[in-house]
Length: 379
Image (cartoon, rainbow, N blue to C red; front, side, top):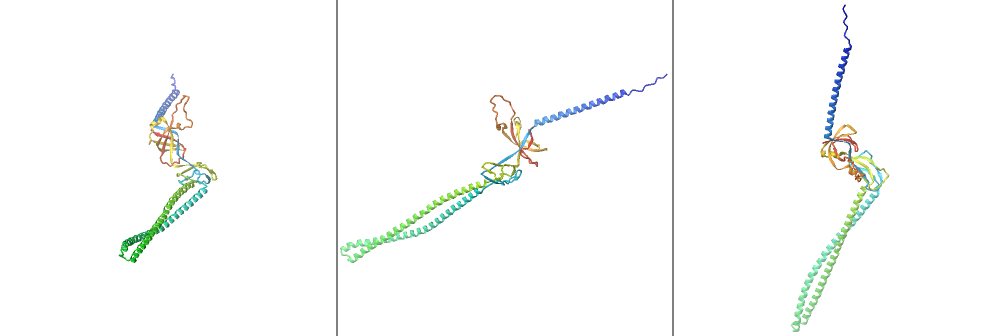
């Protein structure tokens, strides 16, 4: 009798397939874990290398020269052309004060200067007239004096000759060598010549006195010159006062010192302000940089000119290039309002920060002072 053969069971085959599948899954899992581990190690290596070759600062800010414009004069505000957020050109009037009193004072000083200049011109004209008149009179009197001296010399010679004739005639008359009539004539000639010589001498003295009088009159020219010098000094002084008043008048208009953007206006039309009172703030948008506080332990790796990358929080998908242009000379703790002198002896060492400045290369991004940025500095 033949026994029938049984068909092979399907259970061992299914079990074997399941074992193979689990083994393959374990291999894939191990490969994935190994790949992940390698990627993690590679990424960690890159991160460590990046941290060793760069300095990161996450709390840096965009900085600018913030100009606080203050009033130089006291008065009521009549105009405030400046608006917050507006771009203004250098020299543009931002705030104007009531300048009527200053303007009137300037006009008064200008009128005073014109009066002084007119007085000085009158003195110059007077001096010219006196100089011309006295000069011509002095020339005429000098000529008369010379003529009188010449006449005196001639009459003195005639007198000397007549006196000599008379002196020779006296002995001759005693010896009756000449007549009494001739002697009287010679005596009369001597007396006449003496009178004429005396008259000529008197004319000389008169002419000399006239010359001295005219010369004394010309001393008035020196007095006028002294008055002119004093008056010119007064004119110069008045002009200086006028120039100072012009400055005072200009101070009634607060103008933009640079081309910039108005950040905030603190006053309105109708307010009264005093000298030194703050009016508004503005900054130059074309002159921005990044201010970052770097750990003191990183300073040894920094030099001026080092390159850096800037990421602005407002534009996280953009990187800006920058250059380290200045390294601070003191730590930020030196500017604290409440310094810590550590009188008790208890001390906790804290790494200090030093401010550095990074100049940003030109960009089309609209940066604003105070924006938060992250800095990556090459070392």
